[in-house]
Length: 356
Image (cartoon, rainbow, N blue to C red):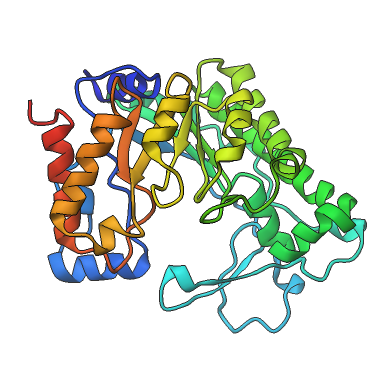
């Protein structure tokens, strides 16, 4: 099989010649330690792993929006992203502090006037068709990453507590920022699909360790219904585009609704929060799964044998009959020993058909 054939077969819940592997990435401090220990700047290459996909994305904006007037008392040199959220950099990316620019907004006009990035100029997306073609010519699948699709962008602009309060006390404020972001995301989804992208990766973290951040009804009213519009925008242009959705934590109550609005692939399926084998039994005829190897317990604190055992179990259960891209459920932290990463790769190759 080619790389593209393999990943598309697996994500269509059919068996392939081997189980695709996602080695993921490191957070900032873990990457520094990896380079220090190995001298390598590419852990995929270091561990002998090649993914079956390549990414495409919008070009950055040529127009710089000055969001600093929306912030007060930021330390000199504090970075801002294109949405205007500031980041007070910590010792590790896990400890970076988000500073929302619209925390103190009180009127709908303030929310309407807040400047969002413009994704529509042709220079930001006219390259997508040729980029996808180059990926396909090399026999890889093309994946577009658009995670932090709506909710996470919105609360990073408005403030988490403020947005959740707006759902109940200031619904016009919530509707304004969510609808403005959704409109941009619908445009991006359509352009990715028009360009021939194989997989569109969406997502917003809405799960905690053992429960949702909000009720399923609240989730659908404010987030799921808008996510459905983004998916429809892609599917109107390319009906067979594969929709991949990411949320950390426990999200079992909304999985049926995610399937209803068009989800094909669930990521990362944290085993500390949800049972991957159980989800395979429940939804394996409708969903493929991407991830499933725990980064809270097994990867950082288990032995190499523990890692190998978990990999074998996932391939034999979740991977049965296809439908699994196996990988750590998030970026690797400094606590993860290099020996455990090596054990993960070796086990996938041994039990996932790579050595045939």
